[in-house]
Amino acid sequence: MACAAARSPADQDRFICIYPAYLNNKKTIAEGRRIPISKAVENPTATEIQDVCSAVGLNVFLEKNKMYSREWNRDLQYRGRVRVQLKQEDGSLCLVQFPSRKSVMLYVAEMIPKLKTRTQKTGGGDQSLQQGEGSKKGKGKKKK
Image (cartoon, rainbow, N blue to C red; front, side):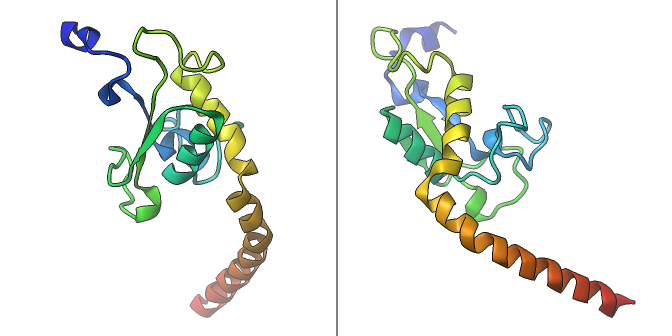
């Protein structure tokens, strides 16, 4: 503990980690979700988390090849970890609106659906969902 306290809060090792699983409404708490399901987002990516954090002015960097230990799916979509600086060298907060890691996670989850990439995807995504449901019904009939 003494070693961790001796290091500066501005060291990249001391930045908080945010994995996409923390904000995913498809996950249970046992699978790693850390915010209420009503505020969580559907399949967030590490890049989206990085975009939101850097847009608000937080010092942030992305580690693309890191994986959450409870994530069983090894796809590229689920990879990545975002490191966010909460405190400055002297121990004061970087931004007053983010006193804790939970406040950062809740803000990011609120802002991800408003990203341009999300708003564009939802228009085309609804059509593909409907087509997907139709093909599932077809598969069910073939089995019988």
